[in-house]
Length: 321
Image 1 (tube, rainbow, N blue to C red):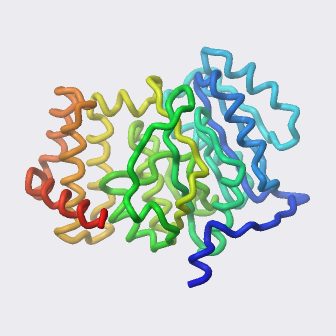
Image 2 (image 1 turned 180 degrees about the horizontal axis):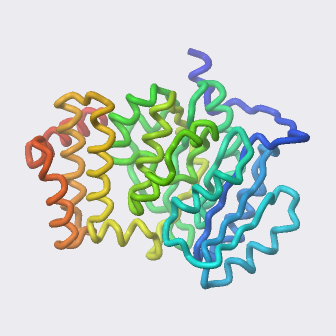
Image 3 (image 1 turned 90 degrees about the vertical axis):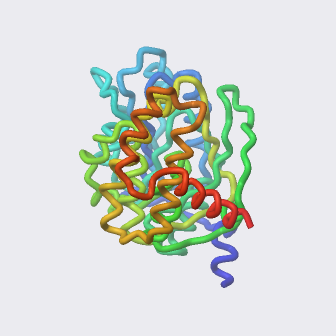
């Protein structure tokens, strides 16, 4: 019990490995020049010293490459790779970074986000205490200027916990993706090596959901309620356009059909998951055309519709108690 209580508050001391780093930090970037200095400084300021950094630029058209080159002399920068042409796929960049990584653990630090200095030390500590395949923390949502975007938190996200991965997938990844930002996660490289990244890359809008599902199903998941990550929201996010077109909701359905047979979901779980996606496609941020695309996909599920939405509402009311 004591272990659980102090899971994310223990302060550990670490020594830098003389050979292989403990953590590989992968920073994929595309046209985020205005945020790169703050991002890089937050990576290099981590109080966990044993890490390497792999910088990836996907043929940015702004000053990104020039900004990143100013950090090349830092001994922690293992590689700086600039693509000749834009890949158009975030997850191809993830795959490239994972191939270069040598650390036991990996942190994909998105280029427009900002980390607190304790992120690596606390999440590595959480994973090791729980023997987890991944650990993630609470994120503060910020706007393009770095100001806080207020959001409510249910009780489960205000306390430390760990659970088996299949339970986490059922309750927290197939409906709303509660790992909403890669920058908030540290995971085991050996587990990532078992994920088919060519499959993940097929889902240009929802590949991260599939990646976390494939990872979580390999073991335990740990969570820290402290805010170690700042998740930036702005008009240039890829996810925003995908939501407007309903593409992410369509791809979420493909992932659901791919994963559900492996989990033997109960009728209640199916209703809650379908209810969430019913709600998602009725948001104002989804265009009428996008809603039609999403409806066409999810209507295949017998549980989908207003009754499923009712199940979802009842489930959410329980979570808030």
